[in-house]
Length: 425
Image (cartoon, rainbow, N blue to C red):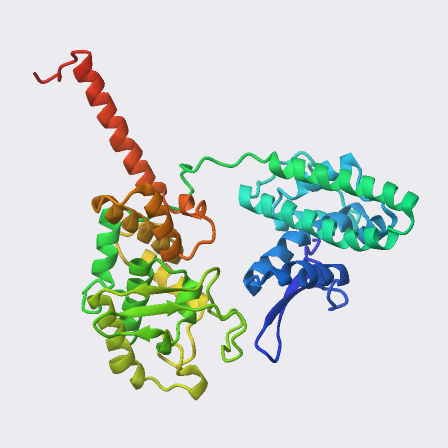
């Protein structure tokens, strides 16, 4: 049996100043892939992106190197000589970017062992639209950036520069054509995340109360978990943002506030994946009840936990050792809610809380008759988006509700207009 082991992996380094930097590593040499490191540091890191985003970029770029190994192509040689990739090869790259990584690694292992598959026409599982889109985007960015250095060196040699640049531009253009030609799935697809329906939200709010008999957690963690769900559901913040909040970020007086800071390189954060704001920093208002709950957690419950001095700043901590809570711990918490509590949906995840908060925010503004143009600005600020278009992804449930209300209203008016009476009359 052939062992299918990925020849590449991601290694996350933490520097003395607290910065986390991912590198694409060779499993054989245990050394970073030089060209990938040049790209991630020189091109992507300069944009002020979070380490998790950079890590995802490298995972996407990994597909180019896996494809090159499978087809026995020397990427550095192709870029330095200006050969780049033929149309057939670009079509092949586009196809491979739609595979699951396990299938690609398996094909590579079989090719190296010179073993043929029983059936070369098997049905492959397709990667999602976003996965393939991100892979092609990363490959295009990598080729664009790394070849730009060669272009700079050839500028004094006009004839050589012109030929190289033409082939380069043609290759990059073809890649973008395939990427932009991807068909985005409809936003109403069954698998697309949406906010919780009202009965599910009511059940979650009920069961997470510390004194609820259906609460699946031990008494030691109940209040902490109550704070977590309340903040995610009421504020619509991301999990990373929640885990990055310090007690000093909370002002819990009569006019409660919590500030979401960008601290991507917090050297006092011991976690491999630190808690941090993904995009914009912002200050969010707290209702009297939510401010009271957070205050009780800080003043009554947290002091009972043994903590190291460096961990005392973090708001959400492990109740057993006082360390800052991790992303995986939050995911396990929601997994337990799904498994142990009846009346909750199978798709209940931490991120669904953000979708739900967006729906609730929109419904509240509709009741207050806030104009659409102002709603966009308020939503953008409250949920920390740079782009107004980001809100569309989080409004599937409320958008569906609104469109159905208008559609039913239109049908009723048409029935009246054309004299159609109710069947019961």
